[in-house]
Length: 412
Image 1: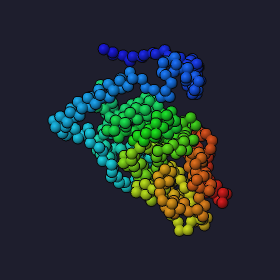
Image 2: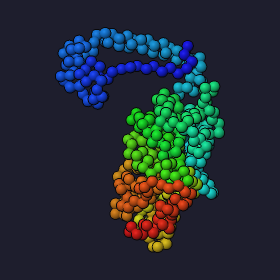
Image 3: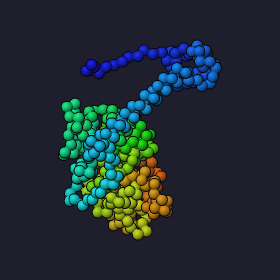
Image 4: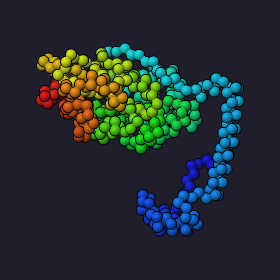
């Protein structure tokens, strides 16, 4: 009986028996017709263009028959199990309901959207009987552990919270495997900037449309003193460019609860980008309108300017709009929680939210790459961040209501 991890080392030769034997070229280049002909002669494969030897066919026939018999035995076991333990069977094999009812009332004071997400998990935990998730050694920062969760350990296989350790790639790969099984609603958490450490696994989830939720906190320069090594600048454009991936960046408690609702209802991978810093609840934010990807959170009749923003910068855009209105500018503000959801809307809706003849200015504390599609002018950060208190960093990069309004007036 093996009680320890076993490593099997196979010594192989690349391109064995070919003219390029031992040459790295075999890895990426075709052998060529002449080389292939010589190889077939050495291996007694004849001159057929495509050949499966009879002994290989026989092996596969045996495998197919064995699998059919195993499947038959398995089906019989499941049938008996369903009769003997009907309640447990339903618990294991039933599909999760696809609609999650969530409501929210504005709270006084300011709360980080990472805390809102944690609260949303705890508020709705009874609806997630098959929830499993964890964090890459950042649980106290991500706030991903809900109150009734138990750690999954060698001693407790019934646990539903996984402490993945500092290994984002492995964490996201494990989540892919859990999602493939099809039984659980699975999520993982780390800082947004560290999603790039696990990106190969995330990309595979997108390629196969796996239902995995990525809870990414500390989503901007707003994380403060940890500095440019932790502050995502180029990450949002990368994620938004990835096919099959829905990227959500909520502005307040209501939009954050939409993110949980959407990820639960949707088939396929979802990234939720959450703030470290505290943010106010916004009067006109909407769970229902968030499904559109973008909507007016402040609407003026016949606006001269439309400010488009996401996440923690939406409240700044609203304050900026107030300043501009005092300077006789008619301003509307759009919360664009998701590029991908907005792209799924009708052309008439898109033009209603972003009319072609109105000047549109995007505001996001991230790279401006990608915003050119939606705005005439882009206000963002196209350099690495800084290490300081987040208020000082926002001021340094011009992300204050006064500096933003001055910048907008200069652009006009």
